[in-house]
Amino acid sequence: MTAAHYFDGRSARQHLVDLSAADGAIRLHGAGLARSYPLAATRLAEPFAHAPMVLYFGDGSHAEVQDPAVRPALAAALGYRKPWVVRWQEHTFAAVVALVLLVLLIASAWHWGIPAAAERLSARVPPSADQALGQNALALLQRQGILQPSGLAPDQQAALQGILQRIEPAAPRIPLRLLSAAAPRLGPNALAFPDGTIVITDELVRTVLGKDGHDIDAHAAAALAGVLAHEVGHVEQRHSVRSITRSSLTAALSATLFGDFSAVAAGLPALLGNMEYSRAMELAADDYAASVLHAHGIPTAPLADLFDHLDEQQQKMPKFLRQAMSYASTHPDAYARGQRLREGQAGQGR
Image 1: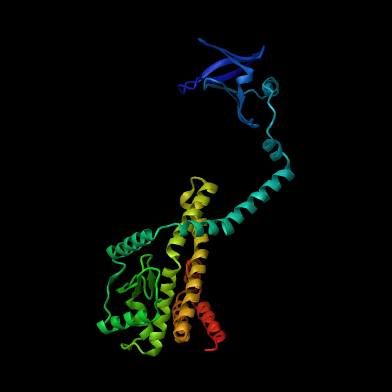
Image 2 (image 1 turned 45 degrees about the vertical axis):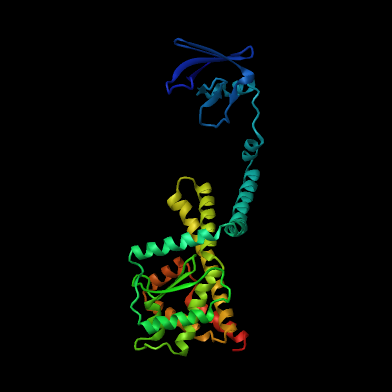
């Protein structure tokens, strides 16, 4: 016989009882309480060295035994045998093997399983989702004042439309639409939305034209053609939907691994994983742009020069800020992208 705490499963009240095991039954006796449960229907929770032994009964109640001295006899009376997982984790070598296998499983899921699953799932996303995502994202940026009415001259905007018409696919996956917008908070940039909308900022156009430039000459037109072809590549390859799908899967895996630390422990791995994925997409869009420019007889050197110029602007920032931005950026290094384009151009003999 030993002292135990009994909970009837209907309230949080704790009953102090005497517990005994004999004649095939567990018997509990306390102030105004007497219970008897068959040993065969009593379940023993997995014991822990410094925690009470917990017995679950068929009516939903349970008892907690604090005295460690009676645990072996009580476990024997219940016919308890440690599961193989418990026996395994009590052996150092087996625990290390299990840990290594778990790490390999997580790494495999992260590097191969999630990308493969994301590709399968994104292929099932209907085109109507692209339209809704693109329209809502564009409207949000406009409401927040991130994208403002363009200040480019009408002839410049017309020239941009002509450049897009020159390099867009003969049969695009979805209709393409070009918008120019002032975006001081984004700076020199271009955006591709899932619904086929491509936004090029005034700041990027002015960067290509230079301080005193107005007319879009052949060199500037080639650079802008490369920028627009890059954004068309994002649309044609559905990078937005694929990225959202992967983000959801990586966040789900991180939350499963790290539980309630969703804002830090789960969010950070998902963010880092998707930065790598986004960089791969940027390089894929660069390759798409290079192939389009080559197909239309447009040199890639002006686009590479633009990347070099953007890299030079970054070099003017403080070193610590430049390194932090490089690490956190979803885009590959601008100088490396320019070099990659030049190497591809040399391979094409241009």
